[in-house]
Length: 501
Image (tube, rainbow, N blue to C red; front, side):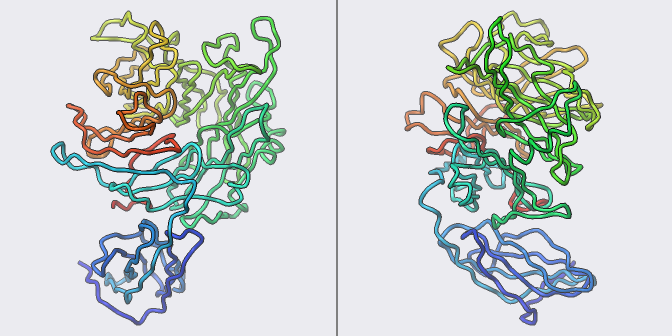
């Protein structure tokens, strides 16, 4: 076992960054070593970053230290893991974090319920609508956030933000836009924990909508049509091959029920590592514009309103289409597919809803106007269960008295059957007409975020994220989020890949 030995012989400095909660620790280390930073309120430290390799031949390593509370003095010291197996500790440094900004961040209040168990460890990633995305500890203290002044000048905010496997973050930056109100501001960007936009061998990791539309002129859909996007919308997914699937809106005037109508549809763009589009999909190629159950607008209608994209185990794509109350499986085939719809899950789709092994005659038991369909389990390339937020807008047979639920559904892709295996709450008692997510945590508990639940507890309007036990739904932990509201909120292990806090 390696032994840490205190040493002050390393050339090291700690300096501030553009983010007042993030420090930059720079140290010169020998060839073949690895460096991590331990930090905490005392010299006992207690929290660590990930390990970073020394450059070939040895030299300077710079690590961003994030996960600290505002306006607080921290101790930090590097651990140098030598190729001999010995670990040497650098001398202690102190760093005092700055204050949080007075705007653009939510109010957070966390409550634990020890009688129900211990919350799953980690930190909470809170995606807001609008304003900044942030990460908080389980006591509700903000430990990290992302704000960009250039974005704020355009009323731009990240929605959503996702951690990447390389230690950076990526966000979809948009303003609140409708065609008759303002100019769209849309950027997909990768940045480090200090908030600085990063580059790779192809250049700056950022693409805006005019640049994307210029590139899309060269890449038609598999149906031969050129897509020009009007807005970056709701989600993106970083793929394991370095590509990013970007969800966009496309506004077209088409004939609907015999009349020319402005229709808000959706498109998917597969961006390679240089942010060049290599595969394009459009809802207008594969869905019927005459099926429009929801969201008529004064100047047209919000036809699809997709909000979640995720790869499937067999190399295709899962797409949540809120305004059709469908989850689609698309023929992506790892970038070679036609984009055709392989199946539609939901009311009036391709699956039979089951209850107790028999077809469920109550169509209201389907999910409606859903958010965040997420694959929970799979086998032999098939999805076997999913989580999804059933927001419940326009629920068949019950509107105008809808309700919302967090669901686990068992899926049989071959037989085309779906059955609700779990719902929260057992007896629905609130309605959240937009947003949210349901995930299963590593400790087996479930976490449910509802973006705008009504009635509101009796607290003022707020979002909540709740961790509950799977079997008995006992409340273990709750985060109350006051406006701006949470689009999504869920647990992540830490701010560093492979590190559990």
